[in-house]
Image 1: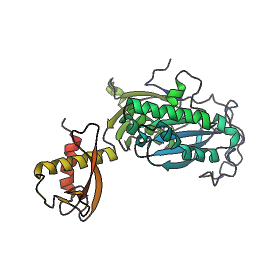
Image 2 (image 1 turned 120 degrees about the vertical axis):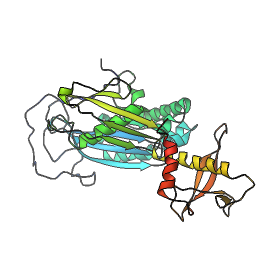
Image 3 (image 1 turned 60 degrees about the horizontal axis):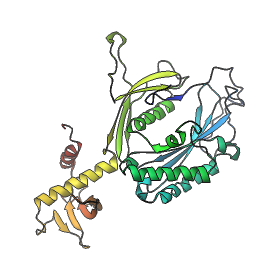
Image 4 (image 1 turned 60 degrees about the vertical axis):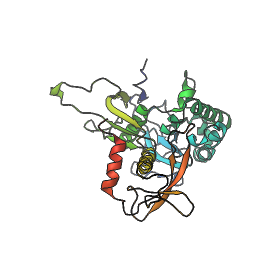
Length: 358
């Protein structure tokens, strides 16, 4: 049995005689619109292995904190590893986490993405085109009950309204796994797999001397770092055990990766933290009865606060959380760069947010 932290994402088929190619030098299509026949490929006429189809599609919906995106991937099986040809990519806003308490609406928000898949995947291939929905840190931050309701509504919508099977359907717990919140560990590792697959460093037929690339994945609510440490053989050392260690089987090879996910340090979440700290520091410096350029009010009566992380001469209305409110409440604040905006002062704020010495 494969351990949960060591998924066998891809097992290449047994070697077979080379497929007959139509024209190995023919440039392939770069999009669905430029594909002469989406049900075939220009690279060969028969698959590398008789047990695999000539062309395959796969659907991945990335349900992020700021929006949802669908990737409709087309692969051919002309070689020992599935070869990526192109993808159709569409995104929508807001993300699933914006539909807290409204699971049915959350599920229907994915319709415009799935309708793109219906137009892209040839009809006779739809029932063998797996779909997976992976939510990230935005839904993790929503809470167990509300996120579970949204995920169940999405599963139901996929099964009743669309022909695409949930990935790995039929295995125990497969439907739940196909539509789920992605663990922070997997989020970074799958980004590492994607980047290195496209850079041809981890495929079954990649050069043996290929060295994998590190991945720094900056999301909306979290950020991840993943790389494959390389040790000198004579040093006789290895990556120590712990949550940071991730064992992966891919392309017939074993990889031991370092990974870590920093929840709350994605771009949008970190920006909110900066706004909250600037607002808090201003409230300590200025009493409620004082009206100063640092904490005045704009024409609409919205509080105005100087923010060193905004460029001088610019302003924007931001939403800050009201400290101590239960349930969580927010208020609008106009933050301005004024004459305080600058890298060094902003960096001081960011260093406090990062809390590197904690």
